[in-house]
Length: 89
Image 1 (cartoon, rainbow, N blue to C red):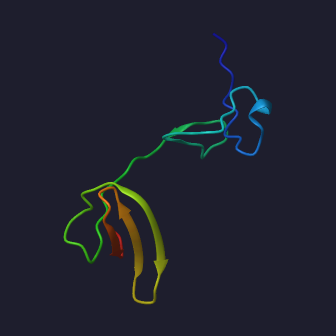
Image 2 (spheres, rainbow, N blue to C red; image 1 turned 135 degrees about the horizontal axis):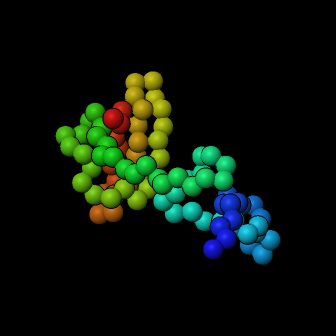
Image 3 (cartoon, rainbow, N blue to C red; image 1 turned 180 degrees about the vertical axis):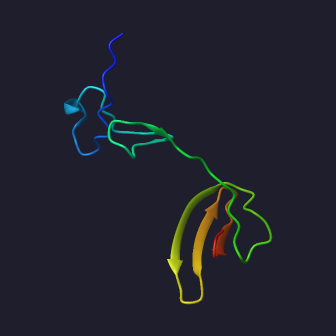
């Protein structure tokens, strides 16, 4: 079997002109070093200063913003709940 080097992610090119081994979509991998695939590092539980426990449902959308008193994250859970967390750790 002849293995070719990974050409990397090519997101700004028509799919018909991709170099051999090039990818336009990546799932659970990253390209930090040219021509090398690395596995995504995974997730960790997030707790907020204004919450009693880690999030118990899947976060499906979120946005963050800074205020003088704190850094806030507004997030939507898969169960439909909309929450705001302060100073994630």
